[in-house]
Image 1 (cartoon, rainbow over the protein chains, first blue to last red):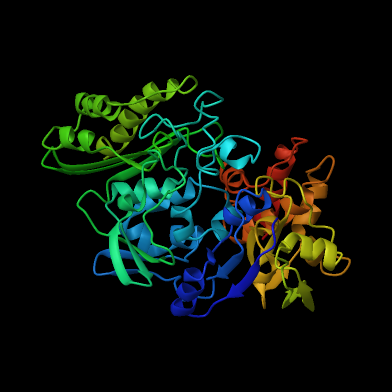
Image 2 (cartoon, one colour; image 1 turned 120 degrees about the vertical axis):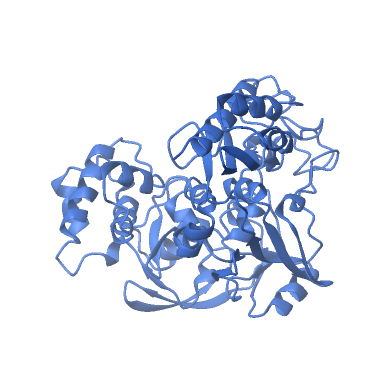
Length: 325
Length: 157
């Protein structure tokens, strides 16, 4: 690990000033410290933000407001989360291990870096780690990589389960930075890799995620997160699908569908949502939605199986949500 | 550049410990190299195996994935802190009773994690134990004994 200076801050102003001066925010550390040890990350200064009072989970009206430093386990076990947004509980508990859920913050979960083995290995070519060096995954071992949102420069998937649920639910991130506060959809936090895969998010230098806000929708109570993976627990998704339906009078009023493990960012499936609206909740509707979900996929040499798996996982998730009594 | 050292205080197994550390020092290395508490094991050193599991303020975490300086003032419990003198922690006794280890390298992490699993009330059935112990890998494959030991200790708790 390369040397760095360490500063523990007590206020958001102090944190932002430190980050503007070139410091990196340190929250749970489960991604950053791991990658620093691998020398993939080499920050010269760490700003430890763990003592900032950003850990509350609460309902404001019917909006679930989650402090950015709340730990995954605390959010998952909080009664307000279970009551307002059971999809978030499910997505959180399907991720990581109990130990890591006790450590990892919500803000850090959203900003966690990719699990592509070439990104993590400093001897390999990787445009994300070293812009212009090439992408070893495109012609390499790419069975776990993305089929949506890829470019000729990067094909890594975004690893967060939580982000998939939040994108499906239309959640917002609230930030504070040198230019003040702002709020925008979680979906807009992420960039497609394009020809600049080293630029992963839309935060400005020094901008700090302070809260995540999850609005209540008619679909929130009828929602599931289905995660397909190589072992039953403590593994990243091969394919995952968050599905939520508002069904009234035997008709789907509105639908939310998003997928993980397949996109270079958490992938909202708007075309699938559109075909579901106004339909009866039955298998033919699920199949039409799934057909739309796989439009535009670009499989690589090793991950063609994900196309059919995505189609089936969309059907399965919608079936679980739409046919539950 | 070099890292300048940082002074912290930890309460480790009930004893206050003052440390002056390079900020790169993981909590795991602080325990093993600076406090000679070598019961906590370094397996993968990347958060995948759980051999380094300790309790910080009562919660189980991977000591390898966190910096010691992040825990100034915290209460840390390691495998050395579970027994009461010569009396084993009930889960330690259950591990012996249920033959829950072979080589023993993962065992300190399994026991600390298992104690937390029981305290969290996530040990209600073998399936639940397996899911909530998935952060602890046993390469000898002693899982049946580990699950049985945790289930037995949970029944008695």
